[in-house]
Length: 228
Image 1 (cartoon, rainbow, N blue to C red):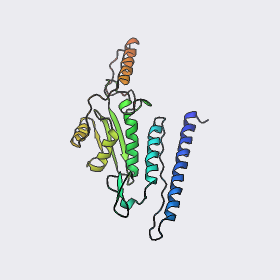
Image 2: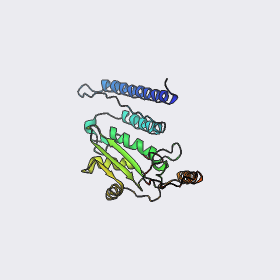
Image 3: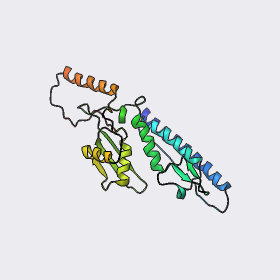
Image 4: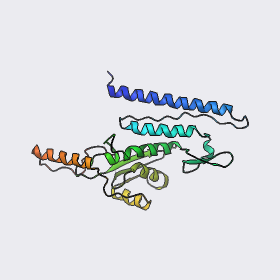
């Protein structure tokens, strides 16, 4: 029997696909009305998530996809940085995002959220020692990937993961080495990425262990919650 959560995720996926197909059809109709001397093909974009807090990313991703839909969808003219492009007259058009841009920017929204979820990123829970350690991974259309693990003092690990994908000779960086590399890449350092709410919850958790007379050594690498 399907759980309510599974049904919700299926409904969310179907709704997202319906929106993406609608966007694709609108784009196709626009292309058909364009000059016969130029040809372009419509593509279907889709964004989905498997967790409740992923809805935050899905909503933002759809906004960026809709933004793309309002511009000419010729990827050959898109800029390398993905958030602006030129039209056929070399006029700069802002608000064009490649798929990997949408993924990164949508996850950034979740990573920085402290109100609607507490599972990942800045609003997440620390490890057993009360230290925030964040993980993230990203893959492009060529199956090339970048990942970061146990990253401290940076609120947007998905952006570090993407930079690893694009510039680092390694696929995965971890711990102090990941932080050192991110600093060299000019990522902003924040030495207090544990919210007050998360800190208080961690303190309560520690106190509950003591109240239960559980004085065994705690593995410092034990994770209370997946942080990103």
